[in-house]
Each structure stands twice: as structure tokens, then as C-alpha cells.
Image (tube, rainbow, N blue to C red; front, top):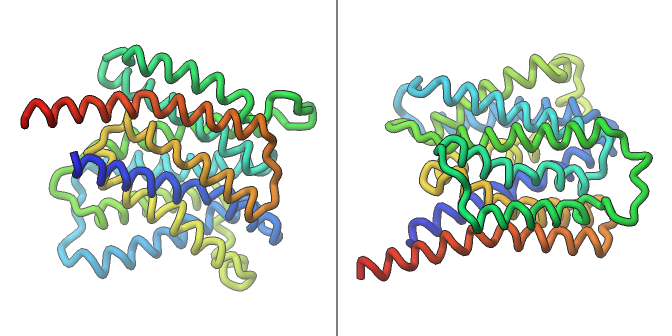
Length: 301
């Protein structure tokens, strides 16, 4: 049980790290860079960091086991941040992260379909609570949203779907592969995807290093690439994609807190209430899982 909680903690840390990304991208945009440039810098510098980690921690040859899984994981992590960055062009960070947060119930659904097993009764209740909490958390009550572009909502929800599949792919364990090896390959294909779809010109036009974008890229590469991918790769295969989606809920309060403290964005009482409702909904199946572990421990003692 102690081991289970250790890996669960790694998932929480990874998700919390990812929650800071929206605020850093917004800060980069305030400094004159585009969301596309910020996301591109994330994966370019993220790949450099992954390569440095690989050099210092892996003295063996690069393994190419499970390449299909790693290519998809790299593509999905890049796609998630590309879509998320697009949503931040139209939405405040606090609202964008609430939309991304929908990966929690989407992830549970993906896990259920993959296992060919319907969610339990408590998980169904959790989904209902999540839907109920999303409405106030997204600021849909007593707020004029007529000026909020529909593109922002669509990009944000698409990012949630992409992130859900990213978590699912990270749940597939590749035996015999070191985490640093896996991180390097995922980072490589994430950077290739981003370079193709975003702003590769920042490398040669002086934006990345000449105009200081690298500072944001370093922070984004660390919190949006290295920490979450590294820890997810270790923990999700042991925790499971379904429970990992639940634990990743800790991303939401971290992201909202960061947007309030660093960007000065306001959060209404109803939004706070909605966030609390969402966390309660996510805590229901997590509590059930904990009770199951306790019963198993008692059985074997």
C-alpha cells in the first residue's frame, strides 16, 4: 500500500507541474511572444533537457522497444500543448484550465472502454458531480460569456481529449526501457511534431535566444515536458490510467492559484464553489480505491 501511495504521489506532482504551464504561456504572451512560439520553445528546450538527462543517466544504448507507443505519446503531448496554447489565445488561464480539466472524466471513460468494463456506481456518481461542478467552475453562471469566442471552448475541450489519450498511452509499460530513454524518445517526437505544426522559425530568426524566449522555454520545458512526462512514465503503469486521471485533478487548483497570484486574474465565489464540487466528485472513486486497498491489506494480515 505504501508503494501504491508513492506512485500516486508522483502522479499528483506531475499533474501539479503541468498546471503551471497555462500561466507561463500567458506571461510569455504578455511579454510579446505568441502562444505558438511559447509552445514551440517548450518542446525544443524540453528535448535538449531530455537529451542532457539521457547523457548523464544512461550509459547504455538507446532502446527502440515500443516505438509505436512512444511515438504516439510524443505526438499527443505536443498536440495537447498546441491545442491548449490555442485556447489561451481566446480564454483567460483560469477558464482554459477548467476546460482542460475535463480530461478527468474523459480519462475514466477511455479506461472503461479499453477494459471493456462499465464504470462502477461510484464512478457514475462521480461523473455526475463533475458535470455539475464544471458549470460554475467554468464561470457559466451570472457571467456574460457573449464575448468569449467559441474557438476558445473548442480548443480547450480538444486539449482535454488529447491529454486523456496521452495519459492512457503513458499507462502502457515498456519492459526493459529506462525512464530517461523513454523520456528522450517522447521528447524527440514531441519536438518534431511541434516544429512541423507551430513556429520552428524561432530557432533561426533570433526569437528563441536573441529576444529571451528561451527563459520561458526553459520553464515550460521543465514544468510542461520533463517533470510530467518523466513522472507519468514511472507512475501511470503502476497506478493505472483510470486512477491517474482522477489524481491528476490536483492540476486544477494549482493552475487556478497560479493564474490568480501571477497573472492577477479574478476568480468568483461560484467558480471556487465549482472547483470544490469537482474535487469532491473526483475524490469519490479515489476514496473507494483506498478502501479497497485497506480491505486487501486486512485480508492478508
